[in-house]
Length: 435
Image 1 (cartoon, rainbow, N blue to C red):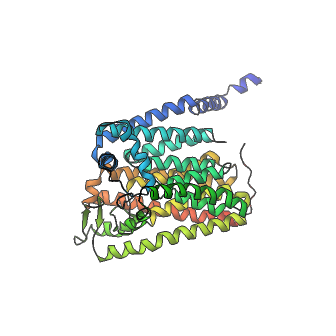
Image 2 (cartoon, helix red, strand yellow):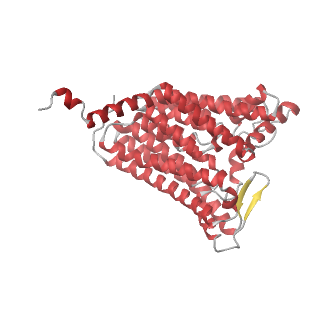
Image 3 (tube, helix red, strand yellow):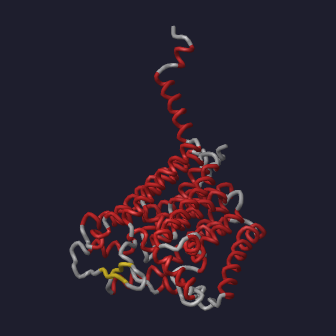
């Protein structure tokens, strides 16, 4: 008969010990930071390989800021702009630290990397599975490729991630971060909306939503008035309204697919806002419809979150994360602009959910497929831009099909998030937090 020591050294037991040891090593902070450095080194290298495709917008940031510094002609203060006033702050940092164009790009990417390092630190400290979530986050960013590091969205994604991770324990700070992010670019406003929809009680709503949001907004608006930009501070919404249907947008998919057999569908470059847009009455009608559909979708999802949070107050943390994912996906699916860097918005709620997830039977069902789908969406996005962008614009079948598949997955993720919100609201299962 085998002894106890013999039993403990069976292949199955040895395999479990090896798996535990490997997990401990991979989830240690040294391993996480090595992964962080390798991921960002590869992304920065790819940014330089593709250069103008990735860093072209960074060159615009530099031009806007240096034009303001040299001749006193600033966006918002002196003319309308495609970004909110707060975007000037991060754009100004590299210009204050270097005088060269290459130096500006390096400092910009360093700024994004440092911001993401802070987000990784916060994410990795979350319980119960923050360190596992860090690996998802890094895998997502590598799959998306270099586009996010060459855009404002590289700063927004860490802001969204930190806000969602700390929302349950520090809702006022989360709202402050979301509002700051929204004054840089609109997307973090979806998190602010989710926080507002899931906050219960008038006092809590005033303390954790209204006051932080109003304080940040008052500072930004006050700065704009002090600089003479009161007439332009809200013009970003008008600038977006004037845009047409961008070729990468989800709503443009029927037109890009139809190009495979219909040569009359044209895509042209807009020299004012530097994007490729679908031309024609049909595309214009879709763009106008999306102008209405986007705010309606955002409000309806917020209403669904509000209803779910009041039916299941013990699940409010899950509802916030699912609702934030739905809002951010809606900002992409119903947007007539389809820039590839937008995909960086949808990784944070998944990463936060992995970090903060519950041990209920339904949690894995809720987040495993979205996590997998999000990484696939990110990888397909990189395939479109920058790898096959010329072929995509030219209407080549493979690149066009990749774009259509990516957009279909985005719609599926949005539908899944909405369905899951309804399921959580109607379910009666008791949830216990993992400790």
